[in-house]
Image 1 (cartoon, helix red, strand yellow):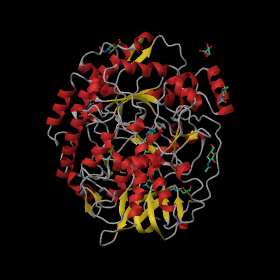
Image 2 (cartoon, protein in one colour; image 1 turned 90 degrees about the horizontal axis):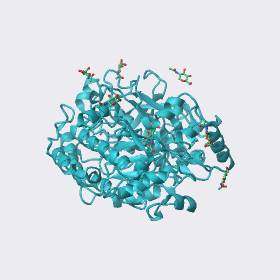
Image 3 (cartoon, protein in one colour; image 1 turned 135 degrees about the horizontal axis):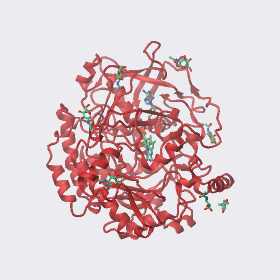
Image 4 (cartoon, helix red, strand yellow; image 1 turned 30 degrees about the vertical axis):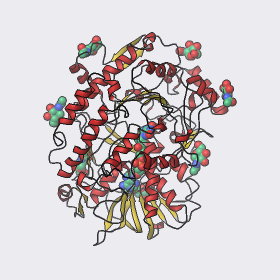
Length: 636
Ligand SMILES: Cc1cc2nc3c(=O)[nH]c(=O)nc-3n(C[C@H](O)[C@H](O)[C@H](O)COP(=O)(O)OP(=O)(O)OC[C@H]3O[C@@H](n4cnc5c(N)ncnc54)[C@H](O)[C@@H]3O)c2cc1C
Ligand SMILES: *[C@@H]1O[C@H](CO)[C@@H](O)[C@H](O)[C@H]1NC(C)=O
Ligand SMILES: *[C@@H]1O[C@H](CO)[C@@H](O)[C@H](O)[C@H]1NC(C)=O
Ligand SMILES: *[C@@H]1O[C@H](CO)[C@@H](O)[C@H](O)[C@H]1NC(C)=O
Ligand SMILES: *[C@@H]1O[C@H](CO)[C@@H](O)[C@H](O)[C@H]1NC(C)=O
Ligand SMILES: *[C@@H]1O[C@H](CO)[C@@H](O)[C@H](O)[C@H]1NC(C)=O
Ligand SMILES: *[C@@H]1O[C@H](CO)[C@@H](O)[C@H](O)[C@H]1NC(C)=O
Ligand SMILES: *[C@@H]1O[C@H](CO)[C@@H](O)[C@H](O)[C@H]1NC(C)=O
């Protein structure tokens, strides 16, 4: 059994898995969906594999001028039930296990051999249908670093992406009253207002958030940029992907698909079908896609559909590399081991795997806490019936109040020199002095090693920078409070198909958590900083008591023992397995998102991010999709 170790969500999940909150309304399936392979045309201009966050965004853009025909093939079903649409508490999508993939990772040798549940969306809308709805951007440096692996003039940079961040999101400011009460700053110049993907603020915030945000003012070096759109680190408020009219989750399906697929006759969607592989002609042009019903257990009955112009893989970081590898595009030794013909030996496919690590700081219980807790409002058996009834009545009446809050809107994204002012240089120097191959998987290809060498140099710089963030505290306004995220893990994992069963087994997902020892150096500093935050600021007035790992865990060894037992290497933000990097640096796609060594095949999803941004990944994924669609149209 995969183990979910998510303290911040733990209460919610452990109390509620299997239960469904809300009115349980079911909606009829949308008429435009094809559910049978027999209904699919023989050919389309474009085939998009995966109707998730990026896939549906690209499909909308490619079909809007009516000139091209598009087929989207999505593994999961169309669903529109309350687990997906409900905003309250942010994670109700996880309450219905049919909304997502969840299978065990490879045992993590540095985490006492624990396996972690690999969770990604598996419905039309993909991970955007189940995510926590937090919307932040990351720092200017993050995007300039991406471009730097190509050239100083790369179109992948802060300036190159800013127009697409604006195109991708429709920003709605907080109400004047909320902004005043909570000192919420925002700057509409960094946002757009044309997208159907909405970023908005709830009408309510937990009162203790004022204290948690104010405490950052007492920490030297913390900046307070207007909002995450500015590309600066610091303490700030961010919106949620919520449509503020009906107060429902805003995600790729309602934003880029509902009401479109049925009116654009050039656009077909087939759900509950899984793509096995891409086929190529003798010139290595991708010509068609082979797919089966999602519940198939063999290739009997597989169908093939042709693409006249291009095939676009948008199956996400976990499944896109698996599809490439099955198609003969990947590390040749892996492919040969499974008897797959090698179309291109592309060693980077499935390497460079990264995610944000979670559960890495110290958890504090506040013994003097006169406020309502988030948990008091959970309608799952642990809450306060009086408070729940009041919140439900208010939400039913006018869609305001605590049930309009998703998983949070405030916190800090802090530079390493702010976290570890006396040790950051030594830690960065020690990391930079490592040999690039030292902590990568044994036998890594020289190009993959060269890519990591380039990243290592840039990441060492990041560890010394005051313009980037490494530590994230996402405030929940409650107690106990423990939401610490490592934004730039230095360890690199792999996502490789299962050689014994490439087509019908999930891939082998190995986070290789803490394989680079510098991550532990960083995480120990996170714990020390988190203690200072609670014990040496105004927060001490609320009688904080460290419950995990406990004030007695004072030595690095004790802190490390705790981290190994508790760290979760994923907070559901996997990236990097089809990295946009030069071929000589282990890249999989070029700056136009086309796969190296073949024609007519591109990747547009979170897997192309060469490195994590200092932010959660949905805002960036939508921006990549918008930019990717323009690149595809430009070469049509
Ligand atoms: C539980 C959870 C919470 C998150 N919370 C946040 C948050 O609060 N803020 C934030 O910014 N980000 C968050 N994220 C991350 C963010 O949602 C993702 O980074 C982003 O949605 C990824 O988009 P994508 O297009 O790469 O992949 P996805 O949206 O996952 O789309 C991939 C699609 O491909 C389909 N597919 C897979 N294999 C096949 C196949 N063989 N054939 C056909 N279809 C296939 C899948 O079913 C899926 O629909 C969260 C993610 C999760 C899972
Ligand atoms: C999805 O559900 C919401 C209500 O929760 C409804 O307003 C919307 O029309 C539904 N969308 C579709 C495509 O059925
Ligand atoms: C983890 O598993 C490996 C291989 O099975 C074993 O050698 C090692 O001792 C285990 N480590 C722990 C901490 O259990
Ligand atoms: C898959 O699902 C379809 C539709 O529900 C069903 O008819 C079929 O028998 C299932 N196939 C397998 C192999 O379970
Ligand atoms: C529930 O909340 C109300 C209002 O804050 C409070 O008066 C009551 O004591 C709480 N009940 C329990 C069981 O904690
Ligand atoms: C919504 O209803 C609540 C009562 O439950 C009320 O206090 C609040 O002012 C209302 N807000 C709006 C915007 O109507
Ligand atoms: C790999 O596939 C084989 C054969 O189906 C299966 O027995 C094994 O459990 C799979 N391994 C993993 C880690 O999923
Ligand atoms: C700290 O104290 C707790 C509770 O008394 C105990 O469980 C834990 O093992 C101790 N940890 C260390 C590092 O001594």
